[in-house]
Structure formats: C-alpha cells, structure tokens
Length: 337
Image (cartoon, rainbow, N blue to C red; front, side, top):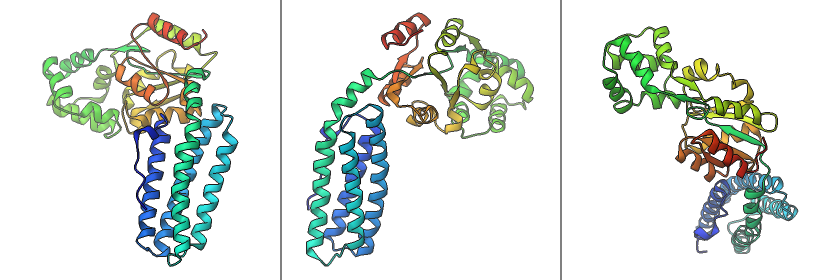
C-alpha cells in the first residue's frame, strides 16, 4: 500500500494535536511497511501496541480540548476513538501474517480510519476550536517578572562586580554576556548556584565571597508600581501565575521578596523546567499547574518573541510596553478589573 503523505492542509492549527496526528501517520505507515514485508506476528504486535498507546494519548488530548470548548460532536469522537482502540486490540490478538485476508483487512482499516477520521471527522471540529480561542472565558493571567513586574538593570550587577574584583564593568559585560554562557546555563538549570559563582569568579580572576556576590547579583530589581497595583486589582477575579526565565538566586533573593509575590498561586521557573523561553515546555508547565486550557489564559511578557511564542501555543500573548498599554490590551480581551 502506498504511504499516506502528510500535507499542510491536514493541520488543525493546534500544535500538539497536529504533532500527534503526524506521529500517528508515521506509525501507521511503519505498520503498513511491516505488513507488506510479511513481518512476523511479533513484529506487527510490537508496533500495534505502540500505536494503541500513542492513540490513547492523542485521544485524551483531543477529547480534553473538545470537552473544554463544549464541542457538540464530542460523543461521536469518543465513539470513534473507542472503536479504533477496540479494533487495534482485536487485530493484535488474531493477526496472522500468512493470512492474506487479514493482512488486506488490516491495511484497509488503517488507511480508511486515518483518511476518514483524521482528515474528515476531525476537520469538522476545526471551526469550533478556532471560535473557542476568540470566545473562551479568561480564567488566569500569567506574568513574566523582569521588566513587567519589576525592572532589572544588569549594569548595576556589573558595577557591583567591578567593585569586588577591580575589573572595569565594560570588560566584565563582554566576558560574562558576550564570551560565556554562564547566565544562560544558570537560568536553564544546567549549572548550580555554586558552579555559577565559581564561573563568575574565574571570569573576574578572583574568588568572590558568596555574600558580597549575592548582594551585587540580586540588587538589580526596581518594582514597577503600576503593574503591581494592577496585579492586586486582578487577583480577586483571576488566577495568577508567574512564569520567568530566572535563576535560583534571583528567585530566592529578589522575586520571592517582591510585595505582590504572595498573589501568585504558583510559579513556572526556567531553571526548574530545564528550559528557557520561548521553549514551549514552560507554557506547558504553567498550564499543567493551572489545569486550564491555553485559550483560557493570558501571558504577558516584555519580549515580543516570547509573547508571540505564547500565542503560538494558544495562550493570548501580550507584549508589555507600559502599564497603560497593558490595561488597554486586557480590556480588549474582556478582562474585568
């Protein structure tokens, strides 16, 4: 049987569903190759097991979206999903590679199911989900920290560091931010606080006392009063979460000491996730902690690329410029103060 080739027109527009559809197609094509090659029952059984497990993951994702959005065809989807799993399990129990009728039946089932279900039945819910993005009730607001909740000034850190080690701040800036990856590695959780201090000490050419270093490293934040006042106004009506590319020492000694920090019910931190924005794993972590759909959440970041990455992950991304502009964007999304 000829492989079914993925086409861009098959995209639903939801990245995780589209990736899963492509993954299912790859597994179906692999299974067809095994059948056509007359592979033993054991070989086919292995891929059937994998196909069933992957399909269950995909169906769970799909049904979660459809249930949350109130899709009227959910029951039909659930029936189709159950039928697929039952049929795959049945083939797994009875499949005989020497029986041409069974090999033909399995090929036909796989091809028909993919073409009829994914490319026809699933396409029926696309307009509904796209409307849901525009119509979903906002339930949570996710804030970046730096230059949104508080401003930060790395030059203050460099000046403090220059005082500690006697090297010009401009030289330290080039060495730390231009010639090393210490900051990126620390914020992504690839090195420990001790390793970070050791690395900066090496750059400075001098062992830096931890207490003195911490003072210079963490004394870089200035509260944005208007944003923090806005957060306090929003908190009674919306769930709040903080999502930040940050390091353990910035989190412990600066972020957690911010007056509005207790308002946030949870945090997603780059060094804990092991990735930095715009990696989608941070958005996935935040949504899992909130147990909400992406469409029900707003994400606010001062970096346009990060706000756009959130939008591509189906959150409502807002690029922060000023408190007044933020209020305008929130009102556009029907957020109530």
